[in-house]
Image (cartoon, rainbow, N blue to C red; front, side, top):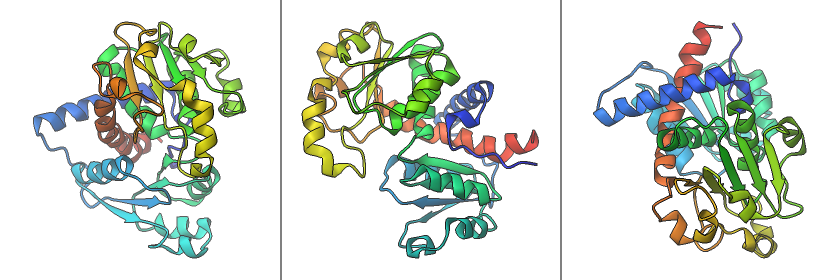
Length: 306
């Protein structure tokens, strides 16, 4: 029985992803009703964090507790990884003691190496390459407010970063059109652009990207690890701020999404993120529900069908 991992949206089939999001909606409804669903008593989630986090840490920790299990937080200061122990060794040891692992780190290759040597499912909680868990929450939020995302238009405005890469993966798996508006030199991963060629349009004009879009989304201009580039990035990205004028180019019922944390007055105006089209708070909450569905899938569904 092969252990399933979630390092990318491409690790699941489109049907599995649709099933997972349907389940996320069910788990959210149970949570809202105050009903307890605890299928994982004594199951343990190991969480490895090389990057700071609010939403990822709380949503995974709370999610595992709500499912009846527990979670262990590990920073570089808490493990031998921070003192140079090989990833392969840590993976072998940790996966013999916990039931599932979530890793939030810089290099995507490190997550892949950990998964290769892990005996339990590994979840990518964010790397510099992609952020698939966030996309699950984004898609759940879109479906809640707008219905089926197939054949719809998503406008990505700003940096071709890990979030943009995950939107490219999502466009392939969910069959929507992705318009990416980025300044020259900030394009997303070239291989992903090729893979999503039938679903993506690369633009320089953010207003054109937003025209008739069903959702407009963005991220900070200087992601973690790129703070030294902030002055240059502010200069290059200022024309790409999501403003009320840009949202007016989108469909009247379009929504605005942002993975947070947000810098009001930089990548998005306060008028937009705090305005009536913003769904960022639902989006943030949905990290909890979509990741509970993901952990359930990896611990129960995937193994039962493996």
